[in-house]
Length: 180
Image (cartoon, rainbow, N blue to C red; front, top):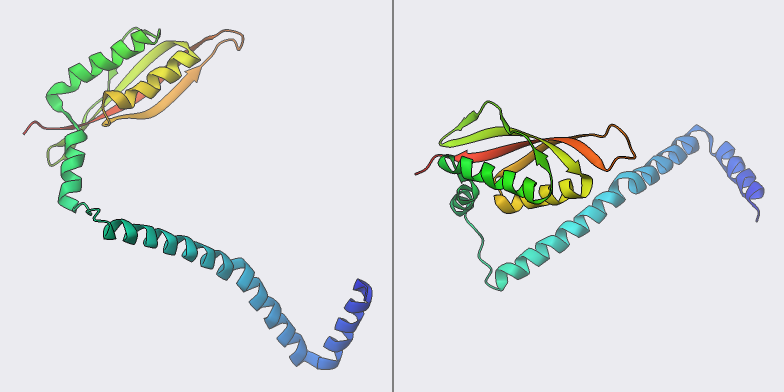
């Protein structure tokens, strides 16, 4: 059967079924749309989550220990920079910029934000000039200095596209803890 003939048979069957048949056909179309639009993606996500659950259950059965919330907080605290170490971290960041052939005239400090409970956040602005590959290398090194140094913003300017040098303003935050 060709498509026109099938359509004609369907229209004839709907006209004979009356309004109840039309409502039934509309409900059938709605259910099909719901199945393919909502249920199928959710079933796929359920399959992924069940797979992750099975993987985690296997790890637990192999003796992998689950870290308690207290241990997670202690690990987090260990990654933070002690407030007294900030000058050393800034010196390390500046030395890394110099090592990567980036010109750094000064480092601007922004207002610190005490976060409470012995935690703080210091913000610094690094105006730099150099090549794009040098900038990328320096940005990659930042996490090696300390995981508590966070890149918040990178603004690049290039006067002329043919020049290899870019002017960059990098805004960093250093998450701190009081020495205890």
